[in-house]
Amino acid sequence: MRTTTENAQLALLLEVSGTPKPGNVDRVREYPDLRFEHFLAGAVGAREGLAMAADGAPVGAAFVRAVEGMSGQSGGNTQFGALLLVTPLVCAAADGALSPESADAVVDATTVEDAADFFRSFEHVEVAVDDPPASMEPLDVRRGAEAVPAVRERGITLGELMADSADRDGIAAEWTDGFPRTFAAAERLQSLDGPVTDRAATVYLDELASTVDTFVVTQHDRETAEEVRQRAAVVRDGDEDVEAFAEELVDREVNPGTTADVVAGALFVALERGMEV
Image (cartoon, rainbow, N blue to C red; front, side, top):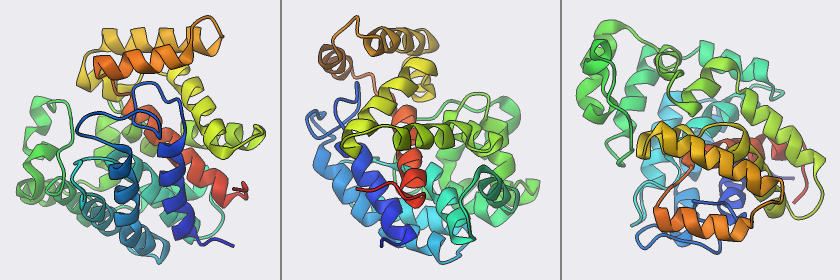
């Protein structure tokens, strides 16, 4: 029987192994400077931070350690968003039954120091983010550890920080709303048959077709993100070839990373709930 830490690490490995995942690295498609092997190495490197979360460490400390370990490969940012989603779920699982309620309790219990650690995590890897509102400029995550004094001065917790970004960031919205997409996608994974990587690819396409990917909004613009969502719906309904769509998005460098992160979180939930591999 796998431990919670092993399930978290396995979720990262299964997510990147599913194919096709239009626009994202998988076991068939890569970008010139971001390859399948980088994601495997990132999942291995993240283990110590995930183990900290499973052992009861504060979510911020566990997350920054997971990101530090993940970054120890030459591809750069492989799983920052996935770790931001999975780490609080690991903390929740460590406290007992994993549920939206237990995940909410982890978010509600976050502290100012958790928020400080979140900012420190940006010292380890470059992450594409939007410019913050003017009122939040001192808390621009791109400042990394330099923003920690402003975090402490404002007394903002990590949960509050996520709530401030929930209207423009899909992972922050999951933190704020009780991880609804993550738990729903986990149920979908468990309802399907066949290899887990195939199920993950199916759920990925479902999610891409149903919700605008906020990373695509940041990376490109909302018009592109909405176009991708609509095209994914056409592909899901069988009116366009999924392999051709996957190739096109890679060629255009359109990377629906938030959708992949939700699938990683869903895989962890499903594994914790007994999904067999």
